Image (cartoon, rainbow, N blue to C red; front, side, top):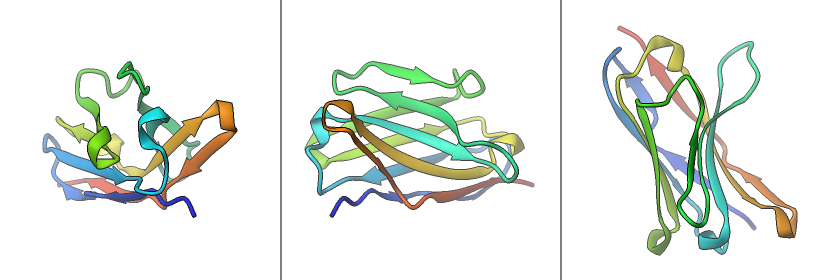
Length: 117
């Protein structure tokens, strides 16, 4: 059974920082493209950031320069460092693992991030 377990969400003031983690102990982690997506109430789920098996990164326009995605293949974990947080970053953040060759597309349960004073 595939498990993606997110952690690190919470309440933070505007301008603050949070670091999300996603552990994926049950997959061949190093070959997967890992991503973070988010969904705010009443809005569609959107890409926040992704990182390929080779370390290439991609970011949504709204988070460029503020968020950083990274991965530790030895720990089967992907991270999202979020700095300079804004109220509009408030959403449920989901971890995703993709490997198209196997039609693999897995999601975590989500972690709430709330940016509010």
